[in-house]
Amino acid sequence: MSGAAIQQQEKDGRGDFDFIVGRWNVHHRRLRERLKGCTDWDEFDGTTEDRSIVGGLGNIGEAALVLNSRSLVATSLRLFDPQTRQWSVYFTNSMQGTLSPPMTGGFTQGRGEFYAQEPFEGKQVFTRLIWSDITPTSIRWEQAFSADGGRTWETNWIMELTRQQE
Image 1 (tube, rainbow, N blue to C red):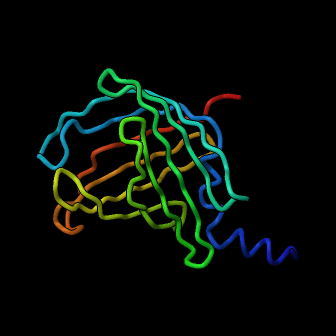
Image 2 (image 1 turned 135 degrees about the vertical axis):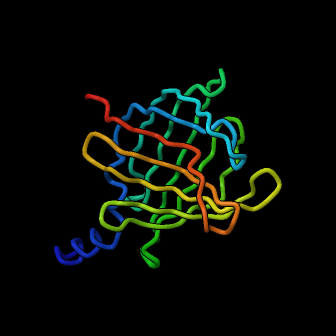
């Protein structure tokens, strides 16, 4: 492959999640109840380790945390489609064992936004993930739900990631 072809691939979005590869400490803030007007948050810590897969067209992250006195392992699978230039993000955890519906999106000027529609407590809601404040040593991630078709959003989970020292 020529140098120009490699540079074009790098610009198409496939490298947008390269920042996540490595080991991270994670501080979580999770809203106790979602879409109920709740303002109480639980705070807890965990770790995650992310690595590149499928020749750089994806990555996988495995997280460990304790939520409500239960140890939990969660996995994020992120895959890039070179045709659409979009990422699809899937989640699973040791309590569910199934993949979530894919959240699709991409990055613009260092900020990633991903959207899906998924079931929540018997109804369909819109979900949004935002990756922001990305530096070599820190990242902010937040999840929000919308029950009104995306007119308003309730942020319900925030993660502050700090790269572990090697």
